[in-house]
Length: 598
Image 1: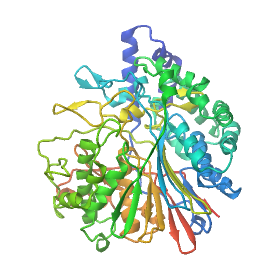
Image 2 (image 1 turned 60 degrees about the vertical axis):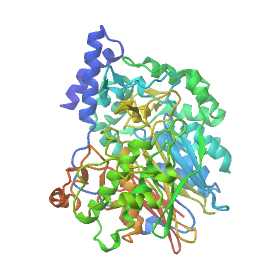
Image 3 (image 1 turned 90 degrees about the vertical axis):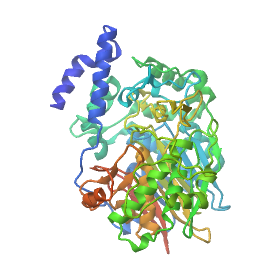
Image 4 (image 1 turned 90 degrees about the horizontal axis):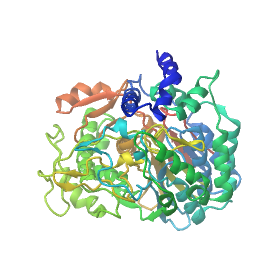
């Protein structure tokens, strides 16, 4: 049936999407297309967690380790390390390869956050390559008169495209820490894109299950046509040329040269809602270096990313609220442990809405929100046997429960990719990057997809009469949930590096894995593979991974007062854990990834 609809749209409707015969006709096609996008981009129930693709022996190494969501990207990083490059060099190679092999999730058309730990000094630097709204963006960007625009209409529009930050961020970080020539690190990705590879299994699944790709010329001509080959094969000579230009000319060609011009033209040309992005916006982009956000959990120190990501704050808040409970005495993944983690998550997400935004625009009290005194007071709200009836934010300097501050439900998409690198010297790169929704804005430029990251802003700018922290504004970075983390023991030695894909679910995925390693003494692979369970706050149910033991607790959790949804939860966690003889990697079996090293 899907192929029949695909033929119908390829014969006619796709051309109307770009060149409508009338405004009314064009609106009808757009509404239908975006409604189909929402219907077909969902996550159907799964049969459980797949078996790991590697043995524990294959995931251990003495000297260095790379973990990522695709084996071609991992191999690109491993080869850099084998040839004497360091963690930053390998990170560039991995990320550029991911642009080709994992295009629905990440790439140079998006942005990300990088934590880099220098082994010689122990210093951790946070690099913020988050996308930025155009200078003409206003608070009502995603409002249709008095109502927020439906997410499915905003995603494929030009309005959703932010100025990409990934290329600039990686170039700056490489300039600070890299040891190999910038251009050299692009060669693995260029070769992959030029020569092609068998289409990854996960990408085949995504194309097969996303009918919206057939409605747009860019994605239909590239993804669908290659998927329909026998056997399906992925090749992108246009991307190979683009990466060659960036390798040779540096980020300037991306932000002020022919690539920048193509980005601006494509985003502005998207009919019905074209972008207001300009060449001046591209030229003005600058990555930011920030202090990582660090806190303690039991005997460990955990460092993550600071705002504009909410990941660091939320993870540390959740763990802080769990600290009073002896999770090690509870069965891993039991109803009791799921309940405690869910309740702490609900409280953290309330604070996330209330306070977290771009620190250049709002004063985010990060240290106060993760302080021991505040999270301990918030933890007192949790009943170990019963779900809270309602959730509100707190005030670190005042009431712990602000009943007059209501929290709306915010719709968010679930893309992104995470990888980790540890080199021979012990330097660490932990990076989460994204183009937001799977397949981003569906706009392809020069062989890569443009992001839809501006849909991470809160669509309704005023709530209860106040401008919300994450409202759209000119040159503002939208709030993120990305949560790359580095965990150290009491002596300051790195024990774990971790992160995940998954939109706002990233926070829950990362917490699940951290508790698995730190409280339940699992290996990083065991912690990643255990069933997923999470809560994203008010308006959302407690989510349990279908086909797993977590789903078996559905009725007990309902009896505790939770609204529960059992569904497929594709995390994408990847991590590296210290062992007595070196390193142990962990790759999410729900993805195509692996952990490799020497």
